[in-house]
Image (cartoon, rainbow, N blue to C red; front, top):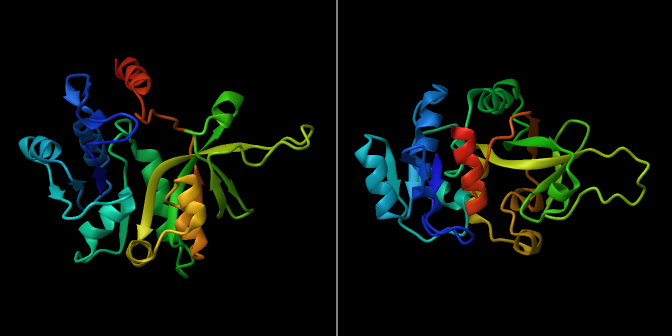
Length: 237
């Protein structure tokens, strides 16, 4: 599922901006389909413009019936009555979606015979202190089994002792959910940590869900700002 909201707060209309001759959302949809990993790929949107664009290229698209705070809610509404086991959320602003990372996510559920994992997500090692400090970069810390302990816009862990060689990981907003966990998320109210940080996956932690983090080396470009779009255009060339 690819949640695709037109009026993004930081960069309105970004999903319809041109990237190498096609809109960003079209590039993301085609990249996801081309992985050949999924039984179906569906764009879920609140926008007639995006709906028409995906329809025009013969893609599978659904309209959200309700207003939603986040992509997980939008997806939950769309899959509520579908007979599925695991659903993967690829963000609409991820045109460089690739096979390797998504395969790793799906493998988590194939290996999880005892169903200990509620959802899985991706993280990338980062070393640039400016990026670590940047509140637009969501950081994650994990336990020894790579289950998420917390997500934050602040640098975590805080380098109180600078002689400790702490590693920092950026959270990439690609998720795979068990349907049950996703529907729980949809029905449970937002609590204070999620509301404070504005990071939706914190809700899962606040309600005791287990998030398995998968390290990937593929950085890609998430298009959150006009500057990101310019970087994406250079990378596309």
